[in-house]
Length: 189
Image 1 (tube, rainbow, N blue to C red):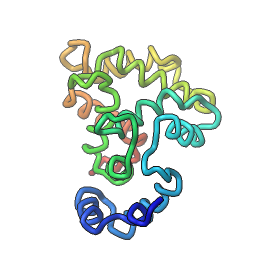
Image 2 (cartoon, rainbow, N blue to C red):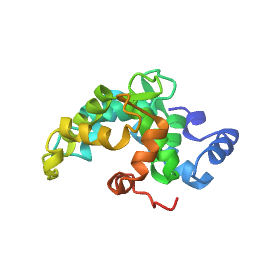
Image 3 (tube, rainbow, N blue to C red):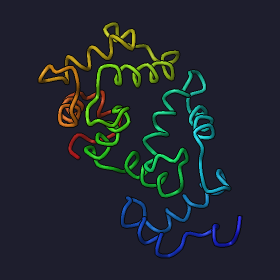
């Protein structure tokens, strides 16, 4: 790792401080940690799945981690650089509720067509269940990923077209306290 890679350039630091919810000192610390974990300056999907899996040792986080990775990887090059990492982290950890919901919508919208289909929702929900089902007791009406997906669509698909628009997703998520809590947001945001 060369000297030019060990520090963020001042113009990059200023740009990221303006684009994220982190100050310059926090960005420097995050960058140091990122380079420590990713000396190449890039994080691959396999590395990401390994790191993500450490947070869910009793389940299989690999499928869900792939979806999170895809959402972090804004340019679609198969790696996450520091800019992609810190911008996504800023939204997921310090963003307003609407920002977090838009980010989540992007993760659920697997084909990027602006809607979440039942199949796409089921794919993500199945990944979540594989990750946490062994340690979390699911409500009876959500015992399977299919049941949870059906419940979500009954609540959110207001126009009954079999897909969720961004507006339906945000409205539905905001009206479901468990989703708001999952995103660790204050409803007043």
